[in-house]
Amino acid sequence: MIKIAVCDDEQRFVEQIKKILVEYGTEIQADIRVSEFYDGVMLLDKYECRYDIIFLDIKMPYIDGVEVAEKIRDRDPEVTIIFLTSLLGRAVDGYRVRASNFLIKPVTRNKLTQEIDRWIEKNREKKQECLLVDNVYGQFMIPISSLRYVETFNRNLLLHTEGKSIVCYKKLKEIKERLGNYGFAQSHKGYLVNFSYIDTIKGNDIILVTNEMIPLSRMMKKEFMTQLARYMGGQL
Image (cartoon, rainbow, N blue to C red; front, top):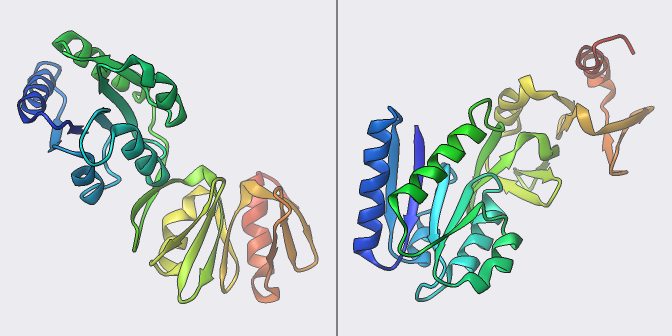
């Protein structure tokens, strides 16, 4: 399934794009689902980190498309963003939010289907594994490979990624089960560590490549070291 959001303040234009995309999905035997939004506020308010592609108008009331894209990027670094515009001068802004392309209005069927074909080809092998979490600010899609460690924080969790730290309302046990097959292990009752970020282990301290220090519980050390050896493919 390919999940697509189309956001533009011209309702007929949104309906036209949806019709083209759904029809093309039938032609290529792909399940294409399209959600319609008519301004950036509506998109942000109802945004779920489950879309594969967003077709996003730049010039809209209340909040323009580039600002919408910036807010979405904070929550979803993997989604493909394609701007719909007649303003080529905003291309620089598009690079800042890693826009995949700019489609000049009026958008042709051929241009739309080319973007679908490009996305399918790019994601044919494997889409990057991500962790979907919720907090008071909304949903966040976190690439698992960017997650350094997880720690308990005020009865919640704090997920430390390469770019920022995100509060998560799940339990550590739940996250541990989700990440168990991705090179993570519990080092302490309040910590879960990504093996790929470990630089050295000194006594009961784990030192990451970022120079952050994570506690290693004496009770958990043996099991942690066994899992680390298995991850490294040898014996420590």
